[in-house]
Amino acid sequence: MDTIKMTRELGKVIQADERYAAYQKAKELNDADEGLQAVIGEFNLIRQKLTMEANKPDDVKDTEKVNALNEEAQNVYAKIMENENMIKFTDSKNAMDEMIRDISAIISMCCDGEDPETCEVQPAGGCGSGGCGGCSGCG
Image 1 (tube, rainbow, N blue to C red):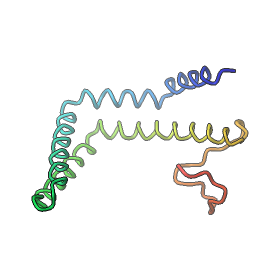
Image 2: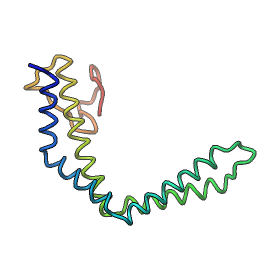
Image 3: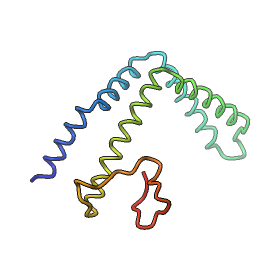
Image 4: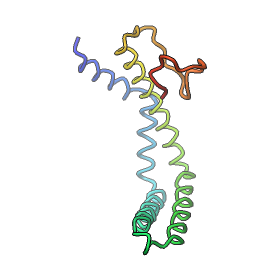
């Protein structure tokens, strides 16, 4: 059995999953949302100005300007994250990330000798066993 071929089959299954479809739709809505794109552009400009000011030598750096730009960036970021399309995108991205994390965990367990039919993916946030002895790590 060719592992690369089977991996490509897994890719097809992932792309057929409803979480993938929701993620793709959310990306398209984000890209088409001109208001959101304008706010993202504004955020990127502020972040660029902030980086430039923060990286200046201490003797010429304007700390008040850095603080003001940082606050402005946080306010614009909050506007981005309150956008309905961004909320849908974030939720769908989190679902995709969780699916990929679970797939990766199963592959890792199999590579460590676990039985592919019985190995269990631990819920995000930890295993809840109370101890981490022998654990390969969370997440």
